[in-house]
Length: 355
Image 1: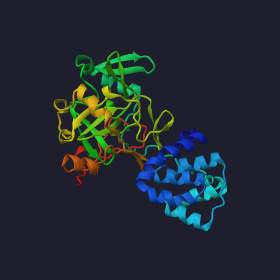
Image 2 (image 1 turned 90 degrees about the vertical axis):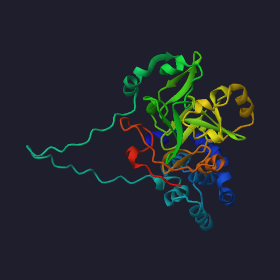
Image 3 (image 1 turned 180 degrees about the horizontal axis):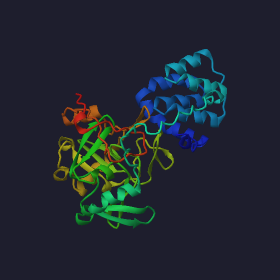
Image 4 (image 1 turned 120 degrees about the horizontal axis):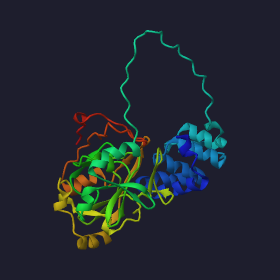
């Protein structure tokens, strides 16, 4: 984690805070209005706190900025009311010196087990998500090819045989989980390529660019009058563990990722829950019309250090589709362990149904 947060500079810290400001004003305008009595740098800390950015990241940026604020009693109370933690408040008043933890006690050496003692068996750890683990699992269902700029990528056989095919399109459906909108694929290889990595076009077809952080889906969402659409994120959408999604060096909130009409699948809301979306998606000439009047609503957020793909929102989808939306427990492929802040939350029979 420390290696990740050290990558941020003062400039990226300010850029991240500015990128989050628009969303915070929509969801908590009254709180931000009150925070205007705070110095600008302290206001940035409030915005980052309310966006779910971890204290580790905020404390590191305070140390890097080396600014000291002479906060009044009223300002300290205001910060606490805005959810800013006591360590962060202390760091603002000391330039970050208070944020540096004291060294812990030296580790205590444990005695070695007695010779001949009983061996303790441990469950084998899931293999880490890596190119080496992905290659043999995907090879039977497509081809690994070299793509300029991206290196070794994978192209499913169906993407070659079916020119209309695209990611997050058929042989699957959407469910809402405790990690947000998740694509449940019926392809035997879908557990990898729809939850890791990114997608790009190459020679007229789609190829999967390997990535090693897991999410319920990696898509951009759009909404038009009576329709919703989604498109696979491009390789330029990068994820920083514990921080969130970035595009062109800025926090990626409701940005379009440079995706165009041909990248999106649009369906009417009354077909959103269908298991065979291929029967109901809009043809290109109609997508052009609806795309022009649509707006991006990705709904990405950090929740206790975990990245959540809120998309158009559970309550909103329930209202426009006239369909109860159950919150199901997200299921990860237990054979693969990704690098991101996501947990494997049990087996398929352990789902939670909430209404």
